[in-house]
Length: 434
Picture 1 (tube, rainbow, N blue to C red):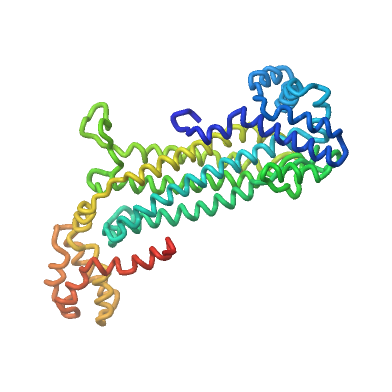
Picture 2: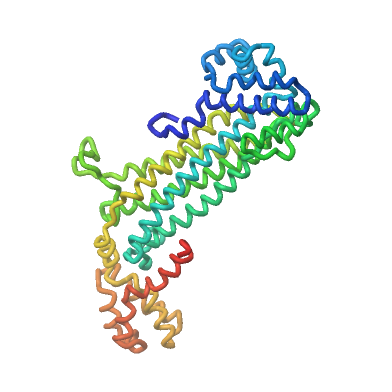
């Protein structure tokens, strides 16, 4: 990804120097295991560790690859230059390139997942804090973009918290799914390398052995991983869309923090735009862009082809770097989001009590009116509010058919906002467990 949407810790996971260091550790641990089995001399295995603190020359590896047209061979040649060709004689014994490439990719994805999990923890903390801060601040709920019934801003934040908490569970599962390694040799039969080598390498690299690989680790694991990133991105967009709506001028129930000296428009000095959440909507599209290619990578020819390779070289860094940035940006937006409770109440009352129509409908049915007649009575008064700007409560009190079933006091009681918040504590307990 471009630096504009990148953060250093995640970028470092995908740097060539990081990749080559992981390759080296895999090869060195494999040599240790081979020496333990008596397959290679112990002194050769020990010699490999001479490169432990030596930085690999990425430019030199690229120079060798320009000739060999093979990245792993280029790396092994450079390693031999560092530790000595005789000492490097048994490096990569019985292994195939995919043993190194696939195991490394999974190490990188596990590290990326750990960063993303920490990002999600920070986002969850921010959502929880804002949920409790605005737990009982009433705002209008909307369905189809139209006023429905009252909710609270706290419930809005709690809803997003619950969604992200599910996503955290999904990411933990995806991390476990991807945390496998394979050192099984050509076509995965262990014909030229003992399974004990794989077990040793995986243990040292924080992975578990792939139960059965061909020449590659099965790509259904990677498909699940990137699909999970796509779901998380969609949840980010879900939150961003709500904030963008709340910042609309005619709504203005909340808005992104506007810092001193910030400018909203090159042409219109009055503008304060939801640029961060609009940006998040776009970044979510980029993360989801990786999902279909990851799915298509599952179907490889026979024991191996490399049609997946070019895809993963791009979507691995791009999807994780972008999601890392997006999660951090959303956390900042939530943390500093400016809330306007007075505007929420003003919007609630814009249609003069109309949002209480269901309570009146239910009260009429409880009073013995058929549901069809009750609906008709409530709707004909509601339409006067829509069409003529009338006051819903006053229209009901003036409707003889309504007052024949409900007393004025009973009608008045149906306009109590507290009725809609009486179970907020129960919902919070379900979401936050406290």
